[in-house]
Image (cartoon, rainbow over the protein chains, first blue to last red):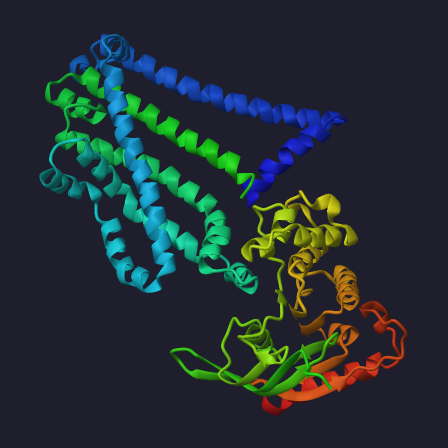
Length: 281
Length: 260
């Protein structure tokens, strides 16, 4: 609710700000300067880290065979980019993550709806879901590979297994905590149960569903990398495990770096969608 | 005399929890005539809201019968509007789309019904706000919007469950005055549940005092005020107002003493 209101009042104050006092202008300036200062520190931290890493490796203070160094990473990045292998691996990992993510969202919405619809079902199955959710999901991956074979489908299932149980529980909790009086309203207007779902439950849960999605996209990426560690011939997870076995540390570190970037971009994308939608919900 | 619009004959309601069985309403009988306004007051927990829920068909009666328009409650085709304590406007819908909610649910989004909404919007000063979102409206406006949402379905009986309790005193007087005049003008029969005795007297033709749980009818008090064209606001200035207030207050006070 709060973020919604902030998002709403900000443009209004901007429009009204034509006659601004000097004090207000000074205040806005300090706020902006502060923001820029934080960004500069963040960038400096990264640059310093990279420089110290490069310098210590070149001076022989750390073992450059094991630890690698930034300029070598960058060179590897360029070569792999040129021969197309990097984009190929990134594409595979992204595809598996997004496919898993889509299945998790669709699946958990469906199951949460069924649970909301049928209380007996939810009460019977909830303890099982709680147990499955508290299980370290990486333990499932080897079993999945035995059952489903070493292929992309398995890796997508692996990604789902990491995220789906928590996702169902989260969305279901959101469904049942909708204000009972809002449902009573629909009932007094002679609405059906399906109309309760469509007109109240789903729209009032959009913020909750979006925040669940934000968590899930990261979890799916975790699931994909676990799967690729165990049973893949392509993808960033495969690059990492293969690189570490053959001591191609530049491949390993580059893949980790790219995973960071992918995770960040996917999260930012969802955050952007959330921000857009929160104006309406 | 023709049938009353709504009739309670020895209605009781019991609800169950694991811990116990609770008799909430016991042997309630009264009737509501056309164009009549009845207020219910009573100690808290005496089942006032339950009573409205029974009429709206949200709960089944345990024993006795409710007749609406001369027919058993389930079979009657009398339109019943129900206004809850809070406005419950849906935050993600514009005011206009909130008001059409009932029509949408009952598949009545036709010209005639939309016309009713447009007129109500214009009459009650919300026309300019039809495209606004609920959070942009004041409490009084929100409550008026909730009333329009209810009136859009042209109810013949209106159930009001403390509809003003969330408003501040000033707004409360104004909104109850507005709503009182809308109800009178449209000739809608109304049941109001409230804690506020002044509000109960100022709006009603009759006040029914309920006892503590299990709720039974303690007293039915017809309100006759010597004021021409009374509205909820002017009613409060009637010379008999205080007398009624004291009478009802004592009845409720006794209730609390006797069994509290």
